[in-house]
Length: 359
Image 1 (cartoon, rainbow, N blue to C red):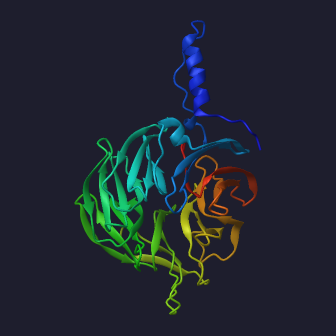
Image 2 (cartoon, rainbow, N blue to C red):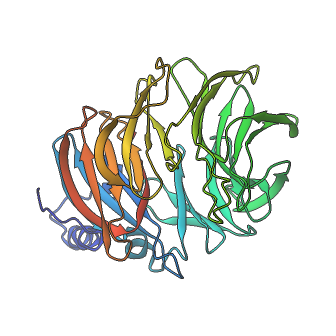
Image 3 (tube, rainbow, N blue to C red):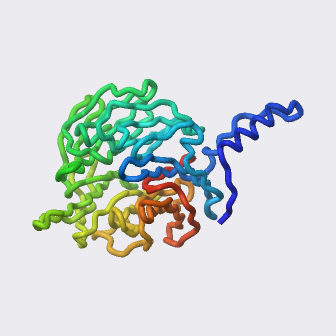
């Protein structure tokens, strides 16, 4: 592994030296986070931990370097308690802080904070529509909040949901997976954003958590199932379900044959003809599923414990995030789409979500 260390402080020092030397032609600001790589969100310790961001500079040959805790380094403060999700649009990156009940808005080029959104109870995920607004799912209030990005303020909300988690926009509608929060649910809420109305619910599997589209324009829902910790026989199977966003009709319904698996982190490849997810939330391998398959996948593509998963928008490589013992820095592992390991590096505490900042 290459061990070139790039830090924001060194870049600032370089810029200062240039500004003080009249013989050096001036140059524009250096934005290293426009280079290809992954911005990794680290949750932080479960009890009172502080979420952090790591930036992993990488290409098809592996990691060039990893810069840990870049938000603190750039902004001079911490993100806050328990990071939960990260997403992006053309201008900004949004970090959802579940424990702090905030959403942090970052400049996509520099990772500088552009605002902190408050007013949530237990935010889970954010979806960005490039229309000046983001939509944030909130377990604590059973609502989808509409947020004005320019003012960092909540302007409206949608109810008719129960523990909303993952969301997806298609056909002018917002689809929200109702995970149930701390109870059970098996529905996807459908909202018309033009009329700001709740159209109804689609019945899927137990505790849906993620929604993603495929190359055909259909939507897939990953349902995590349920473990009855009371031992009364109430365990429920997880499933993978697709539906037509135009009609809300269910197209496929594949049940996981393993009762104890509770999958997470549904992703798709660049072509949209394959889906990937983590076999089980805390100790799972990485599963691959072709949209033309006729049954739930049972053989892992990558046999390695995964807590987070991302797809490289440049080459389709897979980034697997391993939380290890949940008490020490985790690992980021880069795999080819064949399932072969390319490289690995240490990141922050409990890495769980990552995005590619350039693509």
